[in-house]
Amino acid sequence: MQHAFGTVLWVVCGASALAAVIALFVGRKVWDEYGKSRLVLDSDAGHEEAAGSPAAGRERDVEIRELIEARNALRRRRGEPALDPELELARLTAPQIDASLREEIRDLVIARNHRRVRAGKEPLDIEAEIRREIESLSEL
Image 1 (cartoon, rainbow, N blue to C red):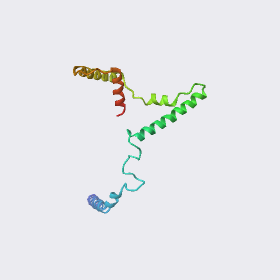
Image 2 (image 1 turned 135 degrees about the horizontal axis):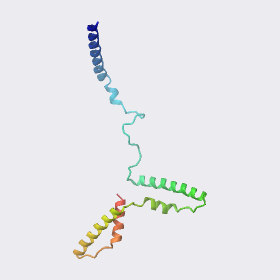
Image 3 (image 1 turned 30 degrees about the vertical axis):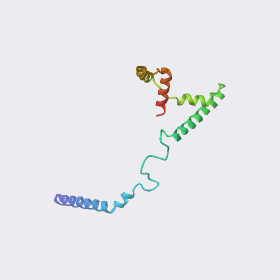
Image 4 (image 1 turned 90 degrees about the horizontal axis):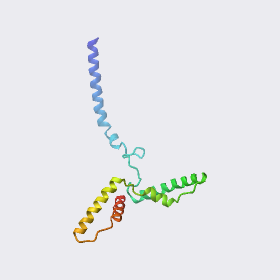
């Protein structure tokens, strides 16, 4: 009886391996078409705009304005003065620069000014140059 068990086990394993190989060749077309329908997408990326694109920025601004209007409605119900949506949008979307980055930018501007003076050019206003550098970083 135990001798028959080993034989049956080998026959079942062999038949399973053979069936798997046959299924692999027969089902190749199924795997080639997998994900091609509209119900199963090939990628996770949707049709939204890229994060840094102007369209994404406009969409972000519209959503922030809606949130500001909702906050203003809540403030009016509480009897508080409403905020100017455009000023609040400008404040919320302004670049957030920490103190260490500001100091690094200041050091770079000062070094650039020293090079300008050595080259015989007039030095630039340091604070204006720092603001310009921060604005150029926010456009990235």
